[in-house]
Image (cartoon, rainbow, N blue to C red; front, side, top):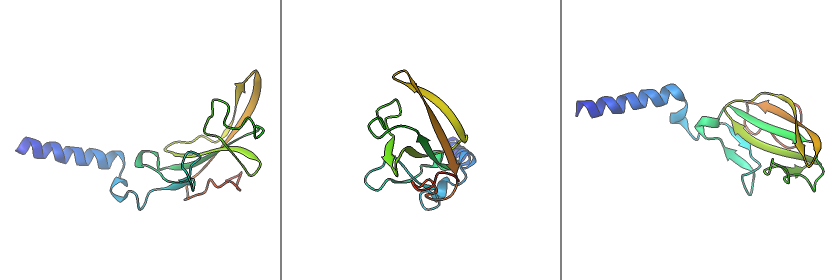
Length: 123
């Protein structure tokens, strides 16, 4: 019985060490817009991905948006965008290739609820 109790105690300590806010989920979790969440695109971020709201923007026309390896992209506000939450984020620009063409993809990071809205491009 003591061994089982110690195991439970160590498990609780481990969980609180990994994510100290895990007991407050979902009330205090970060909330972000998400391209893969339908119908309202709002997501209560899981504890393991509750540090940043992210928006990625790429210079693709509407007919190619979501057709590349970035299948979750959606066309909004005349931009091809992907929105999500994650526990790490590095802002910046990177390129990728699709059908022999190079495209630039810009990543924006923010830390407040729903800060990755479609009408904001700089945080």
